[in-house]
Length: 353
Image 1 (spheres, helix red, strand yellow):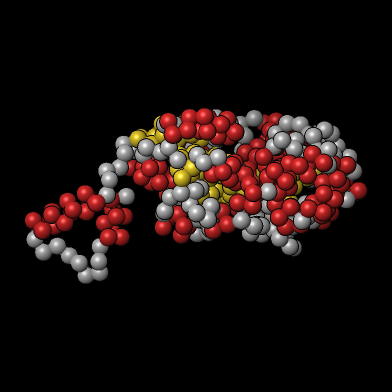
Image 2: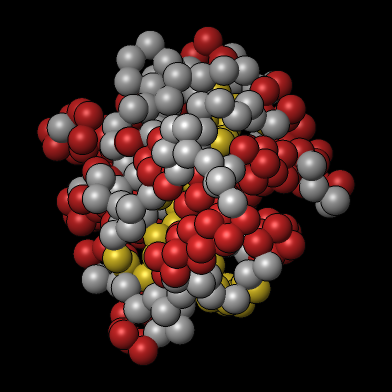
């Protein structure tokens, strides 16, 4: 960070003329910037194994220690709200733009200015006022049975409401934030009437009552309980690389399809981070989030977590590349949070359990 300050504060052609003068200028510049905290406290909804290696690398490169608290996204948000200004947390790291939107609305995040983050994180993947920034991208795809479904039969999310899929679809419950964001995206692009029609058809086509997580939907397709499922792509990648032979076998019987390639693109969501309103170590918090947006960290996300980089100049991992390129929805993910309440009500009206 000091190197960045020195670089950005230098003027073209400026140079030291004497050692004493250089020392005086450096002392003045150091005084202009607060000394970075030796610690940053992180509340993370990401599992420890999926984030701690990066945090350890950050500590090794910066000297800033990271205290990590992990938990469910909604529980961490509730904790931040309850702790208020007394919260020890400096950074909230969570999944789904809907949760980040809720965190801003609850007043537990503060805006930050970071030219670096504004340059490398696309505008549609961050808060317009700097309250939070996307750090990785996940696509919500259609997983289908290789032996029972021809990919040519698949096209869009809306097409899953077609009667041809009656009794053939598996999906998580309406209480799942990923599904809520998917419906919010439909509301933003298709409108309330079309979304209501789609929801009615989708619910009518379910092979079983919604249950389990995304891995369970993939396992159900492999077991023949349904022919297609809507899942986040990284779960599929994790199963293909699992130490559990049964998970690898189930994933091997399934392929993934990226919907809506001829129009708006496949629905995407993010994991992201923001600086808490109570942050006592704000500069260290910003430094950490900037670190997580660096090319090395972005590549690690792609290889280890099977998530797509937010940066356009960082290639996805080998497994992701093997699935081919896809067109992603360019909708600003803030809309997923703004329309969450409407999405939940629409799902309830459709009797999506």
